[in-house]
Length: 416
Image 1 (cartoon, rainbow, N blue to C red):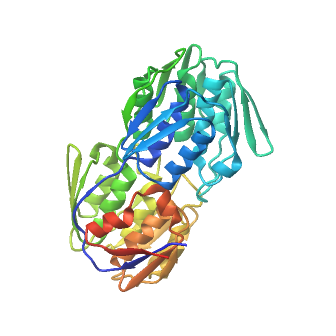
Image 2: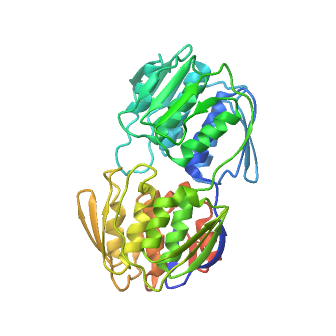
Image 3: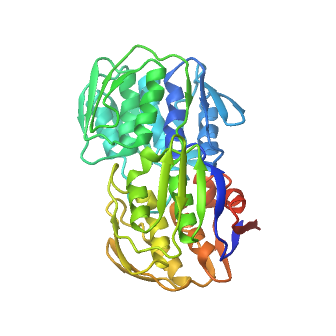
């Protein structure tokens, strides 16, 4: 099993390009199920999760052509509206085929998904929404079975803000009969990107990016071409890596407007951050100031950046309080950071981090995707060598991460 070996102490400088967003690409690839015509997506990142989803779509009978960062999907000969357990057990995003299959095929059989062990992420809001749209839903033997000759428009009020729930129901509603209104909808930029893609395919959607989305169903969707948005979490991760090493970097293909909460915290930590169309420039001080934060749904501070900022605070001046409100098990990286010498105290969903003068290299284990990133950031500034095990999590969500870090001057390499 591959590992990452990092020799700490290098200051990150230079320029690197941001890849397409994993969390936008996955639902948008699923949107191809809604049309019988070919759909082409560009800026698609080469990630394990993307490969898993493409394999799943191929098993359903979807034609797949990939060239560079472009993927063309043709669901005209869709044959099997089934997502089996062995195909989806490693990726929770597989649930995103449920809405499109129900809307296009009138039926779906989708395994309850797996993925990172960071806490409960129930699919009950997806099921509740489809039932409100007239579907018959049963959960049996680990599978969700949906039957619906044609979904009907409805008013859907989710009990909690759910990104994948909003995306699944928005896709299903695109082919439903009548008008669907999703209230308490997720406002994430990835939801807007999906809405833009569906609109290019002929859907009638308004309100994406607000907490109320209105979808007027159409009989069919057409083929289209759509470019995936840049990955805001990858962007934030590189910004944190540069900040913690006292570096100066320029990220191209980036989107500063989707990272306001993260950039505000980096500025609070003492960094100079400048955004211009498609570019973000960061210059870090000699030592960062600790910054407290609380995760919450967009546009507040993203849970997917919490681990990276915990690593940043480990070597910042002062103490910071981090409160995690989204997932109950998302402090598993704290124990591994402690192995590097971090001063972290956990009490329920709150972590108190007191900055230390230096971290020390050690062998640590990645527990989930963003935890992996936090350990890399800590390793970049730790004295000596840090070995990070179980980095297969990284390949799920970061494209060529070690190559990009090496291009910025990091001493990092993958070993068997």
